[in-house]
Image 1 (cartoon, rainbow, N blue to C red):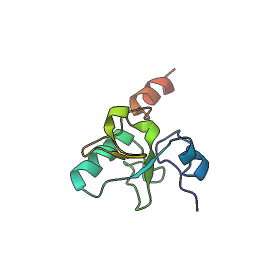
Image 2 (cartoon, rainbow, N blue to C red):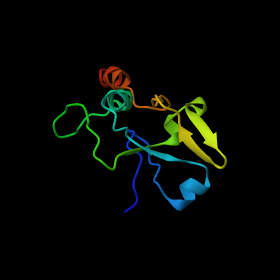
Image 3 (cartoon, helix red, strand yellow):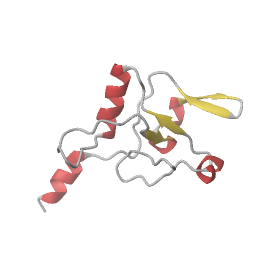
Length: 102
């Protein structure tokens, strides 16, 4: 089964074509503190409970949501640096709240 990026509004899927285009995919950290930072950065709401979304074991984010400086390269491979937190093109709840009043 093809996995999709968990960022709200991102339709990037983990496919051979995506990887050929230079995208990489990253699972949510297992470290509790780092995982919490990622969850807060993604700012996603569970549609059923209306509470903050908790990623499942297969949840991923694509490289589009990280700064280039968040990566270190090892030959043709690249890896997220320790402590990297997604910060690019992420959903901002405040924007939505403002828009619903107009």
